[in-house]
Image 1 (tube, rainbow, N blue to C red):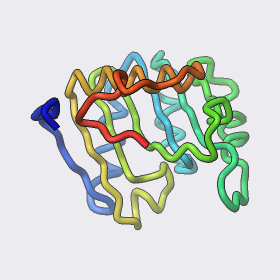
Image 2: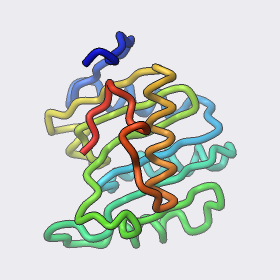
Image 3: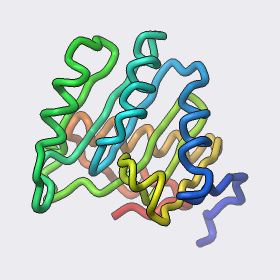
Image 4: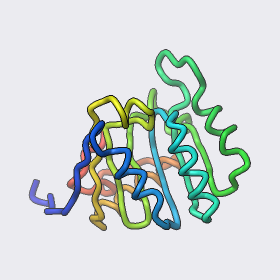
Amino acid sequence: IDNIQYMSWYLWVSPIDSWENFNKILKQDHKSLKMQTYEFTQNNLKKTFEDMASRWTQIKIIIEDKKFQQFTDTFKELKKTFEDQQNIQIKSDFQMKTNYVHSKYTILDSWFVIKTANLTNSSFKKNREYFFFSQNTWVLASLNLIFDKDRSWKQITNQDIHPNLVVC
């Protein structure tokens, strides 16, 4: 508790304004985007990612590939969708040795978004979901470290986690 810091942030709530605000942030120029999510089926967002990749944004995605009661294999579909995009790399959560990757966050060059939402149409248009946006550099650095360790199969330590974050 002693190490928690004040930070500026925005909170967007779906279905009111989340899609417009999230997409608007993504359409800005970025060098990189890192994302962990359980589900990614929102087709307009796939198009946005393709546009970002064509502008040389390096995109790295970690997604669940063994969803509970999975009807379609989203991981394989995403790999196929983006197979011609050299700037989009997709990994499953398999290497993380977990049952499910349930984290939902996006890291941009100077922004991060922690959300309750999967990247589905209903998450943006029908569900009550929360999108926490901030530019806090210390939390951003911590999320980058966590993502990079997850992606390279390295153990996360308590020192990696900023005190403002709760990581399960």
